[in-house]
Structures are given as C-alpha cells and as structure tokens.
Length: 166
Image 1 (cartoon, rainbow, N blue to C red):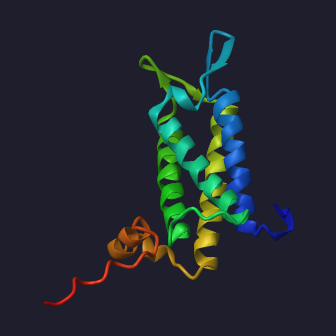
Image 2 (image 1 turned 180 degrees about the vertical axis):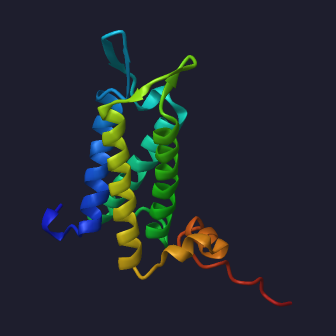
C-alpha cells in the first residue's frame, strides 16, 4: 500500500478511526469528582451511543483504508454511505456529549477519552464529506431517498434480461 497516494480525506477517515479505536477502548470516558476525590472509568462500550458510534466510525475508516489499498468493498456509491454512517456516529456522539455519561443514575463528567473520541468522530465525518464532494456528490444527496437506496443496492449490477417472448 502506497501511503503517498492517500488523499487528505482518506487520512482523516483512517487516522480518525484509529484514534477512535484507541480512545474508545483504552482511555476513560467518564470521571467523577466528589469531596476532593476524583476517579475515571468507562469506555465506549459502557454506553449504547458510544459503542454504536465506535462501530460506525471504525466501519467508515476501514472502508476508506480498503478503498485506498485498491480493494473493492462492493458499493457503487461508497462515499455517500460513508457520509451517512459518519453523520449518524456524529449525532450519537453529540448527544452523548450534551447529556454526558451516566452510571446507575449518577451523572458523570466527560473524561479525556470521550473528548478525544468526539474529536475523532468529527475528523471522520469531515473526511467522509470531503470524500463525498471529491467524488462528485453533495451533502444534499443524503436527503434523496432514491440515491440512498441505490447506495445500499447491489453495487451497480444490471437486472436480469427479460424472459424470451413466445
């Protein structure tokens, strides 16, 4: 794989996904400070919005890396799908940042891992939007139901021929 051929959008998506892997697994997402005591804990898999966003970001980064390596991922409009998935991941992370993490009804503060994962999700979304516009698409395509359905279709295969006439 030739890293010199990576576009800036590919770098954003792959590095963002790598940062998400590390920060989602190994860096604490929540902290609590009470009575001079401070503790951090939790990772992406302690909150549903966290692990769903984690999986979506890694999927986008993985498909970007595979495409840059010359592998086919079987989708005719992959940039649109990547943008959609990263937008959903960003929405989930924004909701988690607004509401903050909680455990058993106790509101917790946002720790470094959550902030880092949030920034990684923003980078992946920015890279997927850049990739979409580089491929000739527009953000408005996300509101076109027909384009979205075609993106999740069979990847450009042609329909079977009609039956022979009698």
